[in-house]
Image 1 (tube, one colour):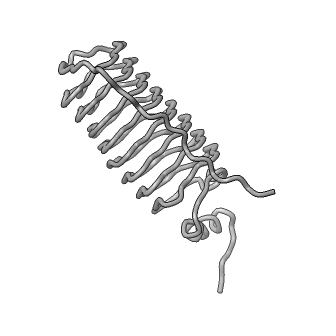
Image 2 (cartoon, rainbow, N blue to C red; image 1 turned 135 degrees about the vertical axis):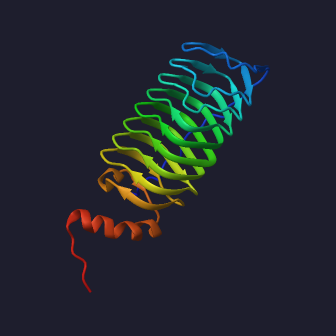
Amino acid sequence: MAKSATAAPRLDPVRLANLEDFDSADLLSGDHCEGQRYTRVQLDGLDLTGITFLECELLSVAMNEAQLRGARFTDCRFEELYAPVFRAARSSWRDVELTRTRLGSAEVFDSALQSVHFDGGKLGYMNLRSSKLTDVLISDCIIDELDLSGARGLRVALQNCRIGTLDVTDAILKDFDLRSSEFSMIRGVGGLKGATVDDYQLNLLAPILAEQLGIRVEG
C-alpha cells in the first residue's frame, strides 16, 4: 500500500471589512475588542489578561511586557508586531495571520493555535511547550529556538525557515513538515515521530540519531 503524502496545513484566509480605527491604548483585562484596527498603538506593559480580539487588525503594534495570559485572538491580522518580551501563556489563536513579526522571548506555552500563519519575521525564544497546534504554517522566519516540548502538532509546516534549536522532547506530531527549513540543533529527536524531512535533513539527523541510540559509526 502506497504511503499517503504529508497533509499541508488547512488555512482559512482572514477577511476583514468595515474596521473602525482605534488609536487608544486604554485597554483593560477582559475587554472584548471587535471589528477594530489598531495602528502604531503602544500596549507595552498593560495588563490585558483574558482580553478578546475578534476580527481585528493590529498594525505596527508594540506589546512588550504586556500581560496577555488567557487572551483570545480570532479572525485577526497582525503586521509588524513588536515585543522583546511577549507574554501570552494559555492563549487561544484561531484564524490568525502574523506578518513580519519581531519577538524576543515569546511565552505562548499551554496555548491553542488553529489555522495560524506566521509569515516572515525574527523570533528569539518561541516557547510553545504543551501547546496544541492544528493547521499552523511558519514560513520565511528566523527563529533562535523553537520549543515544542510536550506539544501536540497536527498539519504543521515550517517552510524556508532558519532555526537554531528545535526542541520536540515528548511532542506528539502528525503531518509535521520540516522540509526546506534549516536547523542547527534538534533536542528530543524521539519526538520527531510523525514528522517529514527531506534527504538532506535526514543526513544531518543521522549522527544525532546514532548518538541517542548508542550506535558507533566507524570507517
